Length: 154
Image (cartoon, rainbow, N blue to C red; front, side):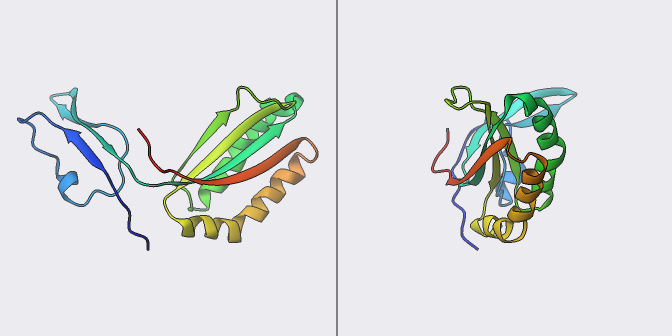
């Protein structure tokens, strides 16, 4: 397995000790950690951890007439099917605002931390999942996919 590089930056008030999870080999954490004190939530640490992610992106141009029904199906059936494969950690649905194409354009981005996960998804699941999409919405969409890797984030 490939080694992961992490950048950890934090600034904590001196009267708050660093939480145990930072000293026990934290590998994935995104966001702000909060410290609960007598039912009051106060910021404990401001930090950033960068872990290179591999993003499998599907850009889909859909006919406007079926867009709402298609998006509902994507959220309820297609995306849960992709996530159920276990190869991805999270996903995002994005609308392309300035698309020159007719119809509506969306991007679905699936995030993973290992190239092996992408290979496993491609080899074992991609064809079947795309076949179901193709059968349901034949001649009503155009799909192309892209594989990307994060270099940095802020």
